[in-house]
Image 1 (tube, rainbow, N blue to C red):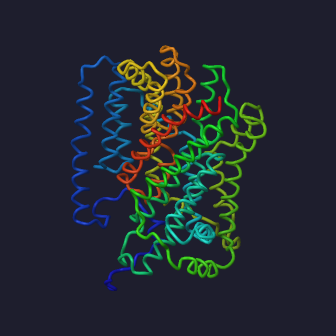
Image 2: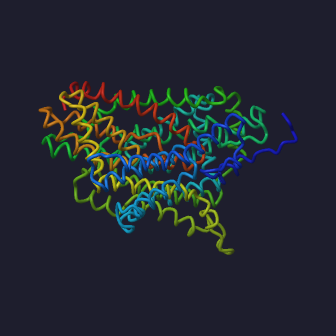
Image 3: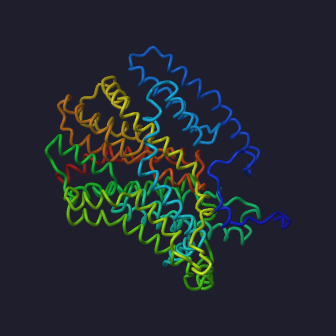
Length: 530
């Protein structure tokens, strides 16, 4: 190794990352630089070309729907090829929506007030405090010290995935990822420093480009989606789909019936997830030899919790408790009880997140000097680009539904394919739900796709129960783009997962997960008798 090269400050790199970086800000090999230049240059001409061509197509579609579809296709090209920063691509699309008269400006921009946006802001500020004060690092060392976990990156990533899945079955997927991301980054920092200390990476390496980091953070995002399928309260699409199915068929799925049906699918999906992430993002090292001794020494050196760490823990713990509490009420009182409706309505995720983050500016570390746990200059360093990006994703999702474009796509595809059997309609339901969820939130996907599938099944003389439940499960998919789910956006916002890595891993898991649902859900419904 060339000792004259500057040594990377791993902690600073993880704290001060930028999700989108120009080519000049990245350390790329000649081959990588050629690929990136080609990808970004292609996007410059391909995005407007795709938009214009689709606008001029002589198709029998409502004018506003055709315009929206053309703009969305162009924006997707911008997101995939990155000729401009990804958040800017979304803003260009929003501007085009108004300029081309799809909807007025006020209607286009109103989804920016979504509670999910405030969940991001609060969660990102909490994560920033946990990283700055060292609490994330402390949590990471605690997980690494579990028997056997710290000996290999395979076990570490798998164990972290199990924890994520278990939590997201009862806690919101977004909240789960928000609370665990600092720990994931803390673990990445530990591994990066080990690689650095042993001379396995150049002194000036970029810890944000480690494959082990991409695998770890994607496990967090995708694992939450898998775990969210396990219970009716694990993800909003589950509740939406269950309600629509009950309304259409008169058959209510109990909490236990849902879990019995979902558990085998979730277990299989988790195995596939581990395989996909570790094969496509093979960690730089498999065995972490000596890490247990290293962890013991570092934990001893950290000593007792500082006042700043205790304050951060109070803010974080309060937020997590308030996130979890509505789910606890649902378990005991049911999701249709007045108590649950009151609690879940007032303890909105976004409100809880910003209130929890506000505690960081109230809890003092030195009252005499009026110093508090976090300064605004620290909070201002969160990734606002990801927040803008997801806001634009919500805008497109709401317009897909409001303009009727999603229904048009579903109905047209169904009539063109000519569906007539349970298997065919179920397969169509899963594919449509996955495709819709790629460009809109999973909640909107369930609300749009399930009502399309039920009348298609009834028209074909097929019981809509299986296809509708399959669409509900598949609505939680959408692993390719940062705007597909809030979890993806948070993972992308970490700066550890390049867009190309997310697309490559996401499309593989989309396809394999969809196959699992199509093949096994009808079988499990038959076995459980629901």
